Every structure is written in C-alpha cells, then in structure tokens.
Image 1 (tube, rainbow, N blue to C red):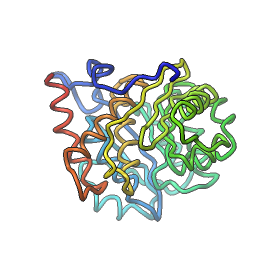
Image 2 (cartoon, one colour; image 1 turned 180 degrees about the horizontal axis):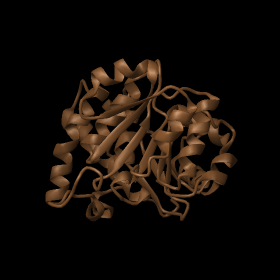
Image 3 (cartoon, rainbow, N blue to C red; image 1 turned 135 degrees about the vertical axis):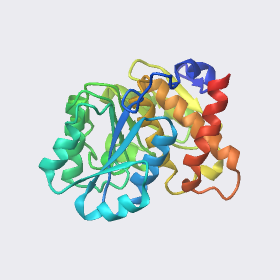
Image 4 (tube, rainbow, N blue to C red; image 1 turned 90 degrees about the horizontal axis):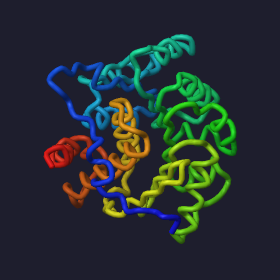
Length: 280
C-alpha cells in the first residue's frame, strides 16, 4: 500500500512544540489567517483552534466591513482590518509572521487567488484550505510554480477533484496513489480528508489517520484542523509532522467529546489532548 503507515504519536510526538521559561508570544509563533466576509465563522474557528494549539500570536486579517463581527467575537485573537489590496499586502508582508492560513470563508475569487500567491511569495509555510483551493480549480500547475517553502493543501474529495481534475478513488490503495501524485505535482504536503485521512509528502512518505470518529463529519471541523496545522507550522514543526500531529489531536479531541459534537467544541478540547502528549 505504497509503504503507507498508520498515523500514531510515536512518529511525531518528540517534535511537538513546547513553551519554555524564556518564551514570548512571538517566539512561540505568529500565525496570520485571512478572514472573509460575509462568511466569518470559519476563520474564527480556525483562529481559536490555532491559539489553543500553542501559537503565541494568532491574527486575522479581516475586511474592514467585517471588523465589528470579528472583533466582538474574538478577545485573545488579534483582528487586523484592511480596506483594500494594498493594506492587505502590508499585513502579509509583516516580517514577524511565521505562517499563513487562507481558505476558511475566504470566498472563491480572483482576490483569494492573488492572496494565496502573495503568501506563497513570502517563502514561509502556507496552509491552503477550502475556498483558497477551489480558487485554483484546474490550476495545480500555478501552485507548483509558486510554492517555495513548507506548504500544505487540505482538500476534501470535492476540492481535490476541482484542483487536480480527478475524483479520489473509493479503494484505499488507489486513493493513496492519487494523493501522492498530487503532492508530487504541487511539491507540497497534501492532506486528503475523509474517513481515512491521507497525508502525503512529495518525498514519498504517506500516513493514514484511521482513528477519526464519525462525529467529525460536521460543518467547521475542517476549519479547526486547518488552524491547528497552521499553528504547529508557525511554531516551527515540519509540515509533514505538523499535519500528522494536528490530524491525530483533532480526532482524539472529537473522541473525548463523543456524540453531539459541533466544531465550536473542538478548540476547547485541544489543550487536554496536548497535555497528555507533552507529559509522556
């Protein structure tokens, strides 16, 4: 099965970021998320998950018109409004930023595609999710040309088909082969979400996350996962291991909650799972 391994903490636990006595908010990682409008909940979910996953500074770049919505709902997450493309570019150019997340609620538009390319040009880790993937439907080659650092694509089946032009197979071996091919095509980590989430690296490594409960099939769960991955990247964790760790923690948090889970519950469950991993 393409040498695929089951995703277990033993593969990445030693690389989990840990705060130290000399840590400060910027040394613990600064993540910038591009928020959207009128859909604002997705980016807010991602931001709370990122903060709970340890990023010292989580900020949302939000359209000026949406500032009251974001600012009234978020206290520990900074909201940085922008009125035009030039102001957004200044936020992206902030040299203190360690990683970016774009996609949750961003909207499918040329402007979203432009933001993705701007983030990629910074040479820092970028998580491309949801609308930011669909904005590149049939244009995987553009991403390949622009990716210059640890980059993660997090499609579900529909987004995978739109970007790479092929529907993920139902049988696991073929699905793994397809995900690996996509990772090679974009020179990025590709995380194909599903019952068995596949994490594939351009260097041929593959992990399968098999312990996710069916309760994770709920709106917003993917936004939470994207925020967790981007947070670990901001803290310096390698992209493949960051994806593996976030996916496992995400699923374990859902298991801890049980039935009735909604995405809003997930960020608050992350610390207890992390505490168990960091103690071992």
